[in-house]
Image 1 (spheres, rainbow, N blue to C red):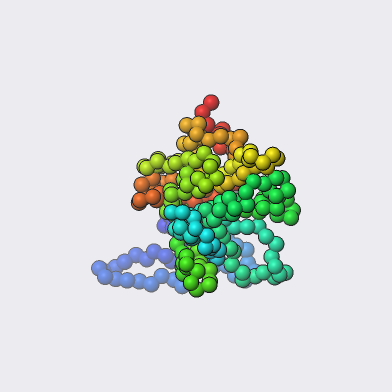
Image 2: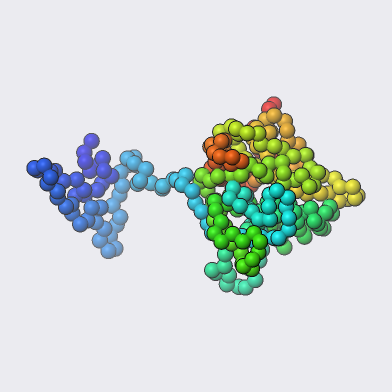
Length: 280
């Protein structure tokens, strides 16, 4: 194979050396020149290396969000969300016509479940007001997993919001504490993640509901579950309203109460989850 093809068409990139220690500078135009208005030189076909095509990456992509906190007590989970927590954004119309420069605000699953507990059972009209935007779309959307917090202020001493650096793709530490705990106050059946979660298992977040004591009203909560829970028959599809895939476990024993997840947030229907992970 020629140097030209081996190095993807780079010109004057490799220079033969003479005596030991000889260093030579290549040309100032290592790539194929393109004159103003000229046609772009054609590449090799088939493409000899991935760098001549669209680059794909599994690197962690982190976005800065405004961490909207609350001072309500949430038991041992604390007053504020932290590293490894899944956070939600809310689909809202901007307050001004040109909202450029405004940070996206996020809140945690624990805080949102506390709002649902405080609200109590809902009828159809109350459900639409809490969960739906004006156009009828579901307005709460998982954004990613918190990689770290800048300026955390759980005691609200500085009257300012912290900045949550949220991983929307790639590898990040994920807290296993919310498994089974975030719906305890609602008396929903909860699923516990056992120690040593298996690598390759998938993490899902669902909106679950059940009939309340009040007629024509239902109780709602967000709950995590694993693909292995579906396989073992520990989930009840009749109680699940909506499902989002959060990511895949790549290290089930990263540290205490933590696993490593490759984040890939996507809305998915429960029927598809059962087809992929259920047992016939």
